[in-house]
Length: 194
Image (cartoon, rainbow, N blue to C red):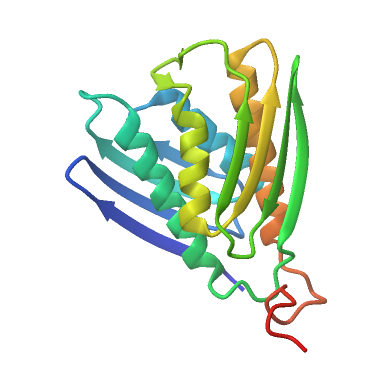
């Protein structure tokens, strides 16, 4: 089974193209114009073993908000479309990832219930060109359009390490959650069953 999706999202502020292959090799080709955000999405792809291509053109002359948010919305939509009715997948996944002094934990329910709790401890307002407040906002946007519940926490002394560990943990947890389970043939839920 090949689960994949191609999504285009165009607004007055952004033009986003996402190609996602869930059964990939971890190849991330990300171009948003926000270098550190590209780095985070590349880490997510690599550690989730997803193949993700992203091309975003946005109004970076204003700030990074629309570019980051719309990219995350489109990526979430691609996950949602690629998973279809979510039959046969494991549904839940979790991971803890250290990066030097930083530690991140991600817990994911990929069963179609959109919600995010994101607690990332940042000391600075920016990491490169990326506003740190946009990092949890991106995770929330991804969760909303993918139909994922994501609990993501990370702390440490170095903001780069905190953010990168968080996206590595998220990638690993997502990989476990969307993995096909040979013992399941339907949607992994008890709703609607007697």
